[in-house]
Image (cartoon, rainbow, N blue to C red; front, side, top):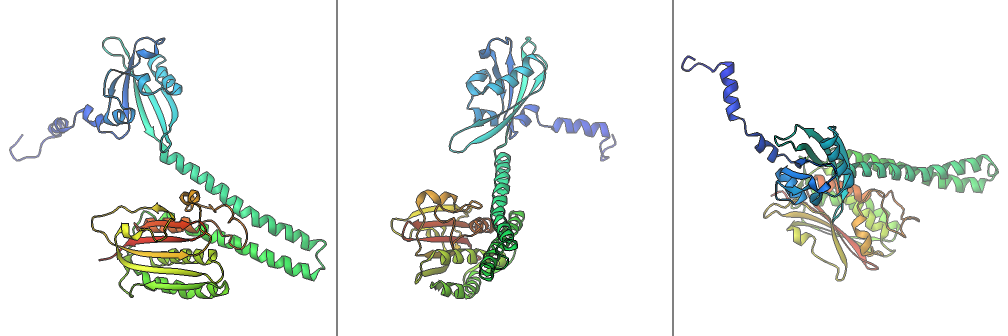
Length: 393
C-alpha cells in the first residue's frame, strides 16, 4: 500500500477484526441473563450443570460461575423441561415463570440447542428476559379498560332506565318528568367529566417523558384557581385561606395549563371533602428542600410519599400544600390513592362522587415536571396534599 493512502478494503476489514472485542466480553456485558447448560444423562436432573453464566445471570440466580447445578439456581419445572427439550430433543424451548418477594417479577426463558462439547456433553443456551414491566403494563391496560367501561356503563344504564320510564307511565307526569330530567342531566354531566378526564390523562401520559420548556409562576396560577373556585366553596360554606409566596418568587419550569390542573384538582378535592364552615388552607412556599417539603404538619397523622423525584445535590423546590379539615383517610388506603378510578371505601357514592382520575392525573403531571407528591392524613382530622416542583434558580 502507498504510504499515506487509505487502506484497501481487505486491510480495513482485517483492522476492524483486530479491534473487535472478544465474544466473551460481549456476552458478559449483555443486560439479559445468559447461561450455557451442559448435561450427559437425561434421567439425572442433578447432572445439568451451568458451565457459563454472564454477569446478569450470576447476579439474578446468585451463582458464582461455571459448575453450579442448574436445579440449585432454578427449580421451576417448566423451565427445566424447556432446558431438557434443547439438550436432549434438539429443539428450541420456552417457558415463563414468576418470582415473589417485595415485588413480583415475571420472567420468560428461551432455550436453544448448541453443538455438543468436545467431550460429548450436550449443550444448550438459555436466555432469561425480564417481562415485569410489560406484564404490569398489560394488566394496567386491562384494568383501565374494565374500569372505564364500568364507570361509563353505570350512568348509561341510569339514562336508559329514565328514558324508558319517561316514554312509559311517567310520560304525562310533569313532576316526575322534571325530577327525572334533572337526574339525567347529572348523569350526562358525570359521563362528560369522565370522558374529559380520560382524554386529559391520555394526553398527559403521551407526553410524560417530554420535559416541559415554559416558565410558570405557581403563585399566579394558584391565585387564578382560587378565584375560580371561591364561588363553589362559598356555596358549600367553605372558606379558602391562602398563604402564598410573593408573585414571581415561586417560578418553575413547566406547562402552565398542567400546573393549573394540579392546583385545581387538589383544591377542588379539599373543598369537596371539607365540612360546612370548614377552612381549606392553601400554601405556596418558594424555596424548600425535599425533606422540608414533606415534613409532618399533623401530629399523629399517617404520611406517605406517592411520588419521589430524582434528587440533585442542593436542589430546592416550590411547594404547594393544600389542607382540609375533612374526615381524613385511614392509613391502609393511602398507597392506592393515585390509582386510576380508585376511591376510598365509604366515599364511592353521594355528593362527593368523582371520576376517580383526579389524583392519577396530578401524579402523572408532577412526574412529567420531575417533582414529588405526598399525602398526610389523620383519620377524623383532615388531609394535606403536598406537590413540589424543582425551583428555577
